[in-house]
Length: 156
Image 1 (spheres, helix red, strand yellow):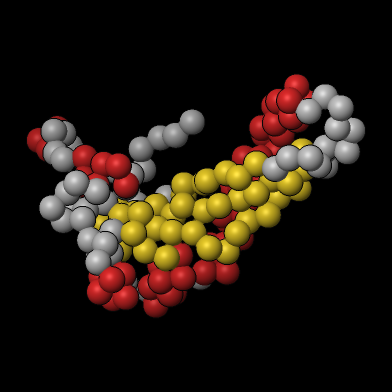
Image 2 (cartoon, rainbow, N blue to C red; image 1 turned 120 degrees about the vertical axis):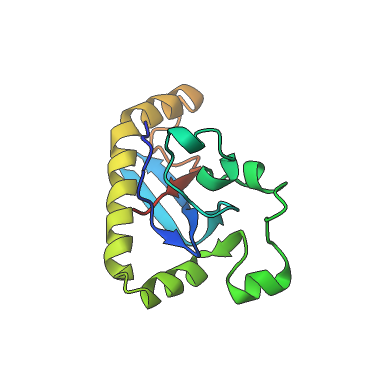
């Protein structure tokens, strides 16, 4: 479930999201590990609030998906852009440093993200456990498999 966030946090006037990776190693008890590596994906055109007069504006303003932006003439992925922290895909470390420079409390942000991940996984835990039991009916310890999930987080 999602809704459009009209006031996203912008870096370099661009909308972005964080792609975070989580491993679920057990459904019962629910055991979650959040990997410290991840990335940020950026739209390739400066953000502007959607209104009637610009509703047909390029997806490259509002969507951060790689598949949407990779063919844009504004897509940046060179080694120089990555090192300068201005590429269309950036490391979490680079983005966290920039956010911290802008005055964002990174420790608090990470706590809020952890809360989001935990609540999301708690809400689907019964379905995960059911699916696992259907695939591994003889596993009584619930630890023969794991699930790697990607969370896309937009900051407002």
